[in-house]
Image (cartoon, rainbow, N blue to C red; front, side, top):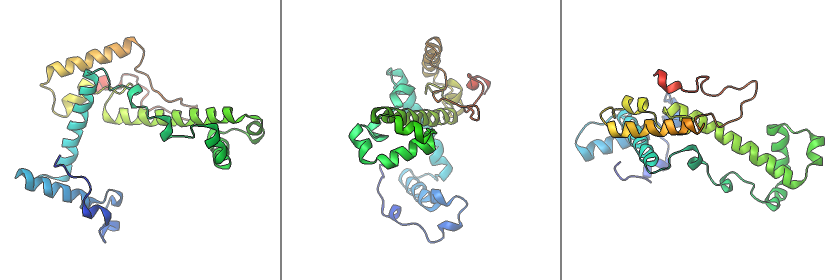
Length: 208
């Protein structure tokens, strides 16, 4: 919000950081941003204020994406290059590593794995990694207050201060209804008998 990105303090961790309640977040760094924004706008800004403002910006941007015909689950899937391996040659170059993934993570037995062609192994690891990504998207969408297809819900937008944006709220509801007709408001991950999606209620947002 202030046009800041790479700052000197980000390369160092405060000596007392390990004593913080949430050391992974490095609270002092976050406070630095709050202090600078306070100085820029002439108004006291807390760390929670930064989070609240960021949430509004992120959801507003997502709503604009929906308005422009984007902002759905299919638009969030990263290129497989980022999840790899992409080619059979790449698989073979790190065969031991990828075979171990198929045994330990996917659950393919050693005998079955030896009988699989490289192309089949490549397909299996792709399917596993994509499913893991879809489960992550399920959790993120649910926590953000979006539908299973990634659309911000009117209920969520009202809760963060956009209750007066009638036109936007109607646009989002229309998008949700269209996704419902197309049967797109469903969880993307494949859940086994010992797994559960983020919510058993498919239209959980309507109860908020």
